[in-house]
Image 1 (cartoon, rainbow, N blue to C red):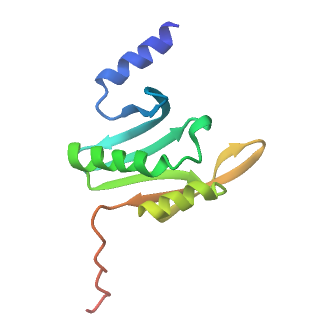
Image 2 (image 1 turned 90 degrees about the horizontal axis):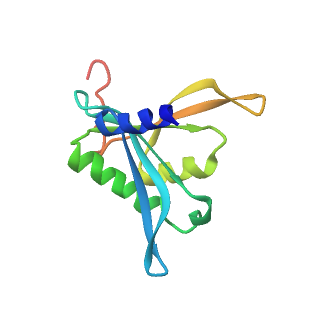
Length: 141
């Protein structure tokens, strides 16, 4: 429909977001395995929101780590970003474990921000910095 076409066309000119198809080679051909998204790209403050969705048929095959490595490569080498962040449902333990393995740390919570199946759930904000944080001096040091 026309509305969907306008949305798709806007992706080509909107520099605040980037959607990418993630493909894998299977049976000698490329198969679409998922999608990566980089949104809220803020070049002034050098940050962006990131995320990825892997098609159900390809989950559990170890694709999330290489997919996020490509997201990191694009964000840090192409966009020259300093900080990546994301929001994940509190009850999504599998994703939270993956993000922690990638180096994301929890930095906040949006209480009861998402309504699913008649219940409110917290969103956890996590972020990644490519360089380890130096401890901030305590007052008086």
